[in-house]
Image 1 (cartoon, rainbow, N blue to C red):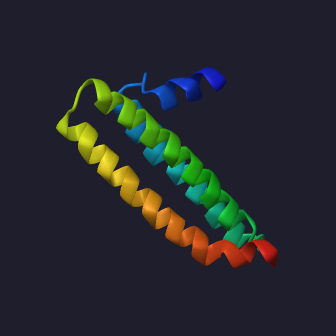
Image 2: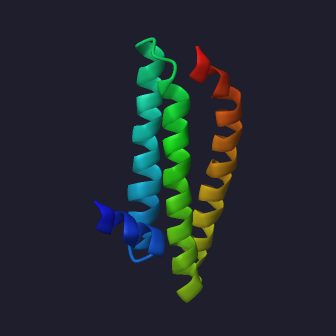
Length: 103
């Protein structure tokens, strides 16, 4: 697992694997864990899953930046913009969900 994360952070994975595989599917699974936390009455899972999602999106952002360092492509720039917007939205959500950690 450490080798795959190292490849993700250093930008050695392809753009589709980085954005769709790790960014989209990984974020979806972590959001699903947060939703399960809502429905099972374990509210601490919601901010915890958002925190883990932000770490994953930072790793994806790092990989995209390393990829763009070598070759700038339209789809790479667009993917980076989407990930940065998701990071900002996630930080806002974490600030709003922070009190759920202490219930």
